[in-house]
Image (cartoon, rainbow, N blue to C red; front, side, top):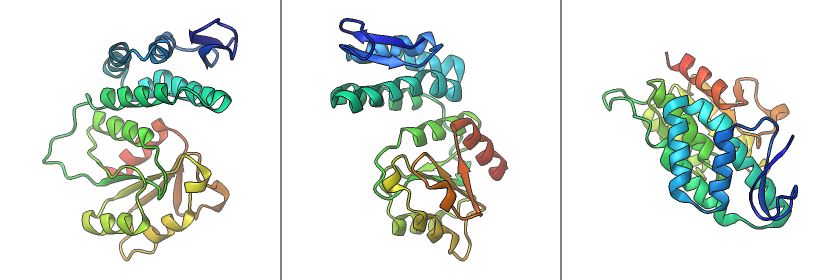
Length: 224
């Protein structure tokens, strides 16, 4: 059964609704309703409760992602609700920021960045929070990191792990990964995360990551 939540007449795909997947988590349903109302306080309450009581990985997978996907699908169908996506994204960023970060004495050995021209960073924010939850500090460079800037950051910080995120196919340029591989002292793990990477074209030494739980496991193992 597909759950349609939001405002409007309740018809599947009609009105101001977000269609969520089968067996949707009740918290995701509540989050979708709050998002469609542009109810920031309710969104933050639901999100912060999920992060606090379930942990980042579960909150991201079961609460945040279904609603983000649903809103994305509504936008593709209607070219509307950008305001909903923006407010929800902000609420997610704020909720992820409540996770305590590791002590400042721990030098980050993990570098997170979005590929050149990639503007989406929420998955990287979720990864940074999930790593922090596990006692692993990281540096998050944010959106649209050019190859030159990425190489400079690696040269200056010497990370053991670099995770490069690409959400859209046009941003998953393998050449950016190859720039890291060509360094005199490349990171121990160079990981390509997100659906924008052409998996068949990835160099064999690049680690593809398919989800948040796997990313945390790979990074923790390399950072041990």
